[in-house]
Length: 479
Ligand SMILES: *[C@@H]1O[C@H](CO)[C@@H](O)[C@H](O)[C@H]1NC(C)=O
Ligand SMILES: *[C@@H]1O[C@H](CO)[C@@H](O)[C@H](O)[C@H]1NC(C)=O
Ligand SMILES: *[C@@H]1O[C@H](CO)[C@@H](O)[C@H](O)[C@H]1NC(C)=O
Ligand SMILES: *[C@@H]1O[C@H](CO)[C@@H](O)[C@H](O)[C@H]1NC(C)=O
Ligand SMILES: *[C@@H]1O[C@H](CO)[C@@H](O)[C@H](O)[C@H]1NC(C)=O
Ligand SMILES: *[C@@H]1O[C@H](CO)[C@@H](O)[C@H](O)[C@H]1NC(C)=O
Ligand SMILES: *[C@@H]1O[C@H](CO)[C@@H](O)[C@H](O)[C@H]1NC(C)=O
Ligand SMILES: *[C@@H]1O[C@H](CO)[C@@H](O)[C@H](O)[C@H]1NC(C)=O
Ligand SMILES: *[C@@H]1O[C@H](CO)[C@@H](O)[C@H](O)[C@H]1NC(C)=O
Image (tube, rainbow, N blue to C red; front, top):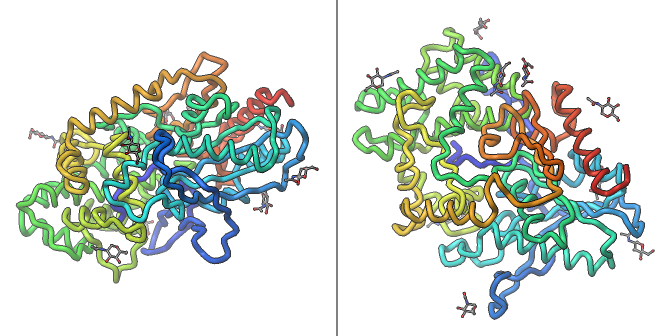
């Protein structure tokens, strides 16, 4: 069971057949670089870019691809920023940005985000150390990286840097242009959430619309299944039937509100994850919807259990941890080697961005239990009592003040968003300002444009990539 909704771009999807019948396509594992075969490099960075007396240094991981580099005096330099996970080496060999690089003869770099993967500025993830895990410090890394590469490769002012990123890293791409306009000439920000928001309730509404675009019955059945689960959570018998259906190995306490909310929250992530990460939405929605609307898979709760367990990819033998305590404990571990970057990303959410996908009335998709207060209690229980609602709101306000939210005062940034991606609700998807073009792709989800060769690519997605390439050409005056 995944513990947290990441918003990184994870589009590669493979078919799994954990149950007979329709298949839910599931994310493949990323091509993690931690193996010995990795050909990554490291560059020295400051722990703190904003305090010159703090001299601590660390090594940040990056990769380079010079296949298309023309090494001319005006060759552009492309930088793909990696987001809230170990960087994925697949971006060194595929992705639309490499097609643009081929077109413009660019030198390409991929840079891992501090505190994720092997880019570890500190010995562990203690709260004291996590204060260096901020978007501002990450942007400081980007700036320092550009300065060092400029020096190492003897690049000049005529080698223009264009920064790319998808999802949170897309926001970083836009913000790098804002904060370091002398270093970053232009940016392409895909599916970038620019407006921080504690209570991101719009997210689940767009999930509901995306399901409804498959069929109204499907969206309604997911909603009714969630309400039924909520009802079952109220009694001991109900909980025991849920534990069996969902293969929970930890006792859920029907008198414990945190357990109940956690249970629904985990289920909501499994639906969100499929809708968000399917790229070209319809077919994957259809596979959820094929189950959710077919009574031969049992009652609504049975069908929900099939969809959730298939998405989480667990074999039947593996039982799911569902208690609140287990969820929180796993994120209290301060070792880099414990669980999947969840502590780091949760810290960024509690500290800077919010983005809690609440569902807090029986009219909302996942019912009434996933309140913002529940999600704030997670922040407190993982990071300490000072991570309360006021701190969350202050952090979110500070983020929006720093970067301008949707009114980001910047030029030469292209924003791409998909209509079926819930994150577009906190991004820029229409613009009348030619210096800040927005490309809205009807019928795609999160980060579809940065991939290549997705199944069933709609015309408007191909057109969006063409438009992006043309825009880059105009920036570079090479068209
Ligand atoms: C429902 O699922 C069953 C079993 O997989 C399948 O045989 C049947 O065709 C499905 N019905 C519909 C209407 O898709
Ligand atoms: C800057 O770093 C020094 C040395 O670690 C520390 O003593 C000082 O408090 C820091 N200043 C600020 C403003 O954080
Ligand atoms: C670019 O050209 C210079 C001068 O010819 C050479 O020293 C350098 O190695 C080349 N760089 C790359 C990455 O090919
Ligand atoms: C660079 O990208 C091209 C495809 O665009 C790929 O064929 C090549 O293997 C990549 N090189 C490295 C060093 O990853
Ligand atoms: C934290 O995670 C590490 C790595 O998985 C593990 O070895 C360690 O026992 C965990 N610590 C606690 C307190 O659970
Ligand atoms: C929502 O809750 C209210 C009050 O508890 C109840 O009257 C209403 O019927 C519920 N609606 C649904 C759709 O369950
Ligand atoms: C669903 O489809 C309709 C028409 O086909 C479209 O107008 C609407 O924007 C779509 N919803 C989403 C969330 O993209
Ligand atoms: C989006 O696409 C759907 C079908 O693919 C179409 O019905 C709808 O009109 C489109 N919406 C917009 C805003 O172009
Ligand atoms: C994208 O550009 C290519 C090459 O310029 C062109 O052949 C193709 O028709 C364009 N596709 C769309 C959908 O605009």
